[in-house]
Image (tube, rainbow, N blue to C red; front, side, top):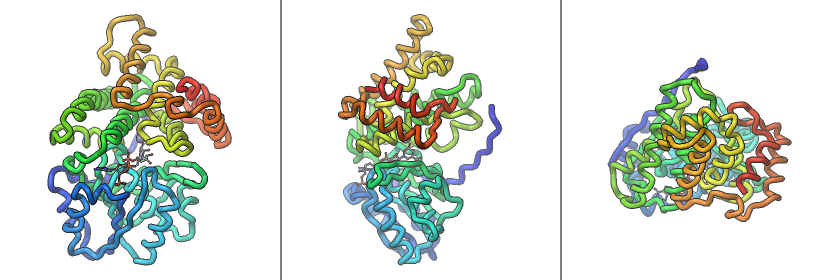
Length: 381
Ligand code: NZQ
Ligand code: ZN
């Protein structure tokens, strides 16, 4: 195990009716900028609960942070934040609203930089206080310091690191209104988050491995149940917590990480508009296939412990595990190949070239560069 330092400062406030806690969790002397997406919160009652809880707080609203939050939209929110002298940010929505608001909170402390320059820098060590009401279990943004920001004009999408939320409210009941496709994308996202931190170097940490395998098995188990029984509260609790635990730094203590599926997936989203979780379903099993020699020991462990495969030689076990992973994404109703999204050679050339120009080398062995990305994408066709 490698040396590591762990500090996750986010207070999780979990359960029914907890949005009312905003009234006491946000200081009453704060000037709050409350950010929203396109309006789902008005349909599921979240907006009314937030407004009721913030009755005593001076606050302004910003609407319209879209899926894959765009810098063009976020610049408008930053301008509003400056005009209104806000001192506190509250994001209410899915990962996109949270991520966009992390950037706003950071950009408000960097008046010298254009917000896209800040994204390209990759991080900010300063930010205004930030908290969230998370309505979509997927990204883990409610308990991590990451944000992924897009530029529509340039068709680019990059990760940016800054603030953990001071607190995040998770009420599983507010997820009942998620459209089935969004649930499917989120389950793929949770699954691949775990794989990015698990399917790497063998023999690093028993406890990290078992934790990761537990989340993978939970996601596989609850996926069909969520579809069959969409308003089952206990199921929703497991769904919400799986998302948080998959990407709140807990399963990556002292172990190597991959993230190449995500980096290639971001390009598919930036260039083709594919929803984040579905972009991962298109790439992930192709990556496992291309890198199966490097990941061999871990793939065998995954085959046995996650899919309970025991019959066959090593190559057969690995191939069955990869096939079952692909079938899992398909059972969610997601596309698992580039051609299903109308993508072909041109997209592969563009992504490969972008990786080469940027000097990319992702993956636990840092060997996913432009040429390796090409091989993976050709496999994903
Ligand atoms: O915009 P509204 O109207 O609110 O509707 C949203 C949006 O259309 C809707 N939605 C959210 N909660 C709902 C709901 N609809 C009904 N009921 C609810 N309770 O869902 C749609 C998608 O929302 P979005 O926030 O875009 O989805 P998600 O949470 O999957 O976030 C995706 C973004 O997060 C980034 C992705 O790249 C993408 O940009 N990621 C962020 C990460 C992080 N911060 O650590 C890591 C991830 O790997 C990921 O890259
Ligand atoms: Zn993701």
